[in-house]
Length: 250
Ligand code: IPE
Ligand code: IPE
Ligand code: MG
Image 1 (cartoon, helix red, strand yellow):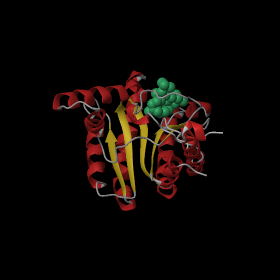
Image 2 (cartoon, helix red, strand yellow):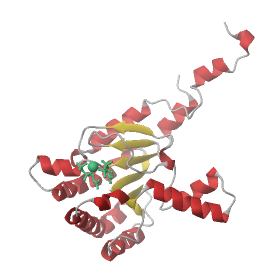
Image 3 (cartoon, helix red, strand yellow):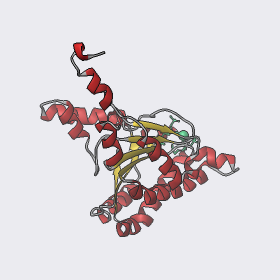
Image 4 (cartoon, protein in one colour):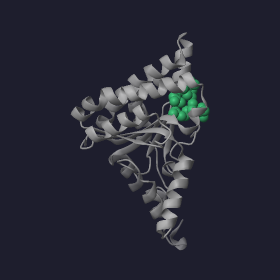
């Protein structure tokens, strides 16, 4: 028998987070540049966005550039910014036609002007999409987002988990992550959505991000559906036993 909590996780539309890792290694293993790996990674983003609605995923938050990625060599960072700008510019109309709403979370004050302009354009062109809420995290730091939200919530008071959560709600489709995927064999959060991942189911794969397909996404969702999410409670059967008076227990 399935618990209510299990039922909830199997039927509600999912918020899936993806830490898209392994682009650089993908390039290096082919004798290409790391930037070529990032370019190949862009194709995987398209595959996943196409597959998501059919897997009952209504919100997809993908980590594209962390605030710590500024530490990388200038040519790699410039290449990634250029790719992001190019991708946003090229995909604005196709996404709008496909009903994909794309928003970007993270800081904008350190991005090149052209990248910010491309982000603003795609956000406005795709604003009415309802097929998929796609969110790209760019210059994103979970800790920084929490600090900023805490300051906003504190000054507007009362300061509670709900008001902090509301203050964190940037971009469309904000809510807790159900399933968090990380590619390339690494098993860490790397300062992604820390608050929103509190009860996320974690799924790791050795596959490097540029090789990730819609089938891989399906595998992750299948694994998720076999998980028993308890949120600190008990599965239904165990809860029924546990709530019986002690004298009724065998
Ligand atoms: C993920 O690939 C993309 C970003 C972090 C921006 P990496 O560039 O981290 O690739 P690896 O982990 O070095 O292979
Ligand atoms: C995390 O990957 C950030 C993104 C996928 C955008 P990194 O490759 O930067 O993370 P670490 O350095 O291995 O933790
Ligand atoms: Mg990496």
